[in-house]
Length: 369
Image 1 (tube, helix red, strand yellow):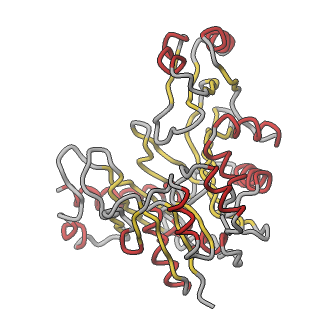
Image 2 (cartoon, helix red, strand yellow; image 1 turned 180 degrees about the vertical axis):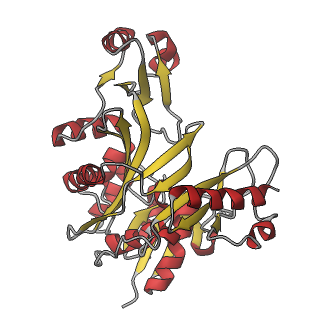
Image 3 (cartoon, rainbow, N blue to C red; image 1 turned 30 degrees about the vertical axis):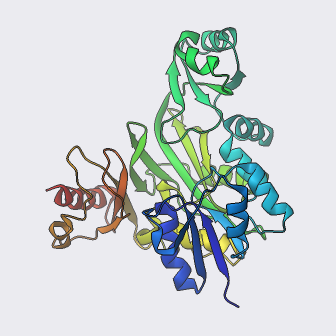
């Protein structure tokens, strides 16, 4: 019997789930925020914060999953009460939506995390900063992503506006890390779990700019174990991305979580036997998970961020098409905006990460030329 997957959110993650859904023989429907959303090919437009809209959408599908984590939990809990199959469940999504809840639960699971505290006053903040070297990272408990809702502070005066607004705030030690890693994995509703190799992510202005797979000289076993403990302990279904700090001594600390396909896994479309998008669909439908083996020894992904001069990268596609390399270009059909994620490039190599990156950069430069 044909099964229908419903995705709430019409961004590029939903867009990239359309092709594997078709290939697996599923119907796919998307509840998008706007008519020109990247996933418009399979979308109807509606407000994901309106209960009746989401309820009506859920009636037309067999399972509800997500392009983002921003659907209000009370709406998802109502769907559960209605008997709707929601994956991941709101009980798990709580920990992706609320950083304070996430830190508390990870501490209970014994997962390595930075020192942290919940703060609500000048005294709380200044006390933590004093105990942690005169600097700390302050985060809003909800609503932050891609560097938003995060500040490096040295005194409570740096947080006057957030305190005045009564925001729930999380303060953490400023970790002296040498690089950022991401461990992508997936778990189906029967509990089968599988992981891709841990990757290195390179950020610019708080946004992921590059992903290198596999991360050179990383503790792959430790990263995978952390992800498995989290996926099992939080009851996650679908793809889980665990963002990690690697310290000078090789220790890994969990920074953030995402319970959906993730920017750090876009390379899997071309660089893995099973992409993160296909795996997510398999997981939420409780199908056997696919192989996470690489299609090549090395892969590098570059995000195409809106440059200084208006360019959707589609205008110069022919410049890159003639290059004789392994690069794969993925565009999201978005209107130009400075710094916006417009697409990505993945290049593969059997020789080295440096070779894959050189090919990806050549393609990137051709799209800018």
